[in-house]
Length: 185
Image (cartoon, rainbow, N blue to C red):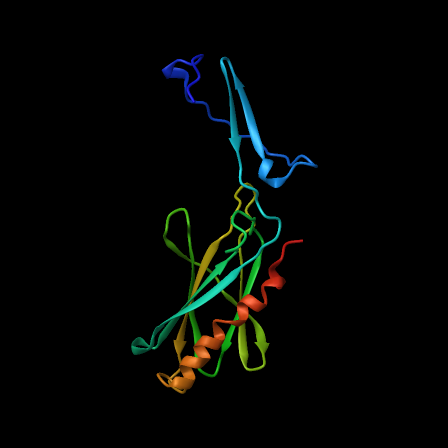
């Protein structure tokens, strides 16, 4: 829409507005309205979920080099939800795998940034690691986000065997069933 009341040199308007949900309105009715000299401009916004939903974990094997990359996507079913301060906990079998490194795939730049994936305990032969998304004031980390964890395959493991491949598949499953641990309050 062109507002005839604006000249080309003054046509750029930058606004920073807090959006407040009005009770009684449906989420799909979220919008902002700007009244300018000769036109009214309306912007519609998609609803942002209130709870974190959807965690996917996939494994990419590089057994020739003794590594497995685990890609963990958080908030795949709740695009836009705030992840600041959220702690992601993952585990793997310590008898066959050893933690090597972790990165966060920055969705804005596409770059992989190293992160601290901290050991937090053991549970039934599995070692647990955690990463907490930063809680920066003024900077919201929105879902979905991707964390990539690399593990080394221990030589004592059953590297390359069918049972080891089943184990990899099993490790990629439990995270989804623990999704309720990550709901926001």
